[in-house]
Amino acid sequence: MTWTDTSQDTHSLDDIADTDVVVVGGGQAGIAMSEHLGAQGIPHLVLERHRVAERWRTERWDGLRANGPAWHDRFPGLEFTSGGPHHFPGRDDIVGYLEDYARQVNAPIRTGVEVRRVGRAPGRAGYAVETSRGAIHAGAVVAATGPFQVPLMPPLIDIDAPVVQMHSNAYRSPEALIPGGVLVVGAGSSGAQIADELNRAGRQVWLSVGPHERPPRRYRGRDFVWWLGVLGKWDAPTPGPSTRHVTIAVSGAEGGQTVDFRRMAARGITLVGMTESYAAGEVHFAPDLERNLAAGDQSLQGLLAEADAFVARRGLDLPAELEAHEIPPDPPCVYDPVRTLDLAGEGISTVIWATGYRTDFSWLDLDVFDTGGNPAHSRGVTDEPGVYFLGLPWLSRRGSSFIWGVWHDARFIADQIAIQRAYMDHHRVSAPVPHPSET
Image (cartoon, rainbow, N blue to C red; front, side, top):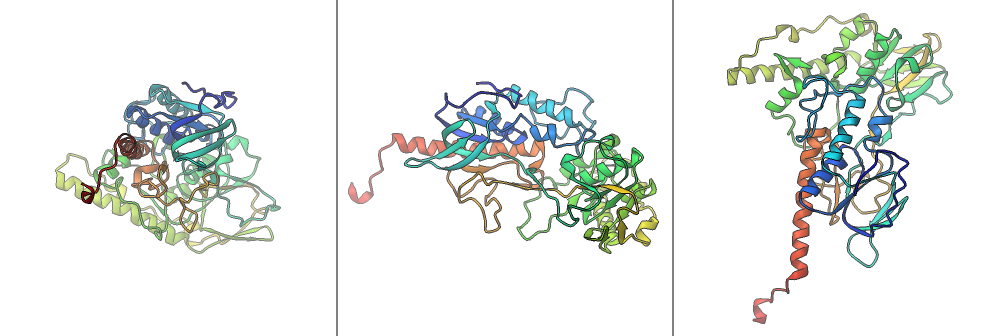
């Protein structure tokens, strides 16, 4: 069975009535899952509603760069073929890489097949998988659709406001926007990259900065992904449900540079606090910009201190980098903050919401969610026999949503599926063990 990279694939599922495992989603999580299932000899099928790596193709901007270097953010079995190990792959590089890997592991992907409902199979064990191309039965189901499903756009600015509003997943390039200034809301990796790209293209940019962590891109000759690895931070356990998520501002753009909001302000970007409200053509911001920057500085300095201590303990020959500890002076927009922004008066034509995503598992008609509607699982394993989640942030560790991290999570889930299959095989071929009282 082979896959095709076109959403116009006309393959039906008429030739498949049953399979051991259905994997829903043909992105990095689905491909990793297929590799490990295939290695264990477990029959399976990967269903993708569009094309392999579709969100990378159509929901990322033209100039996007990965947040990690090519030597690190990859599957163990394949290196990126161009750019060298220390470059930051672009959108098209990643699409090509995932296509190549799917072919390498011979992933049985059917594209152009939308999964519309998964529920318990009536009258038998397993699950009924209803799709746009027919229905099949699966002994197990892996939800591998990833975290970037439904764009979040807080309803703060009226839809009839005199600006074009879009989520970052709809942004393509500075040239594709109508003339005028741009307000970017959200200063994580996407917001920081987009704001910097627009500024370099000559646009007037305002950047709304909330709470964030701000690691160094490189320190003492090593990329920050290396530091997170040797310091054990990639394997940090999943935080509790009450833990507040704080975005990370890190970028691979322009060859990979530390995100420094003060230096961005020095290049012409106006920093503002969190976007709070809108009324009568004006956007209002919280008085928290200085506090948010200070918290980001604290996270930076904390990681640098841990790195220095690691170098000292190990006796590593890595040159000191005192300038990395220096915090530039506050620009005027910090000590004299903009609290109100007149959109028309400032010539702002576009608002880009870099405010993240939510998941949508409405197709999964099973009791696998908590009271808040979030997937209920332990390392991707649910209480529903044979139902698993893969590709979610913090599924098992900090690195779970990265290409290499999802590969390790997929191996664990494949092991769990294999273990359960072995028990059920034993059940089918073995007679019940008599109770001692019966012998």
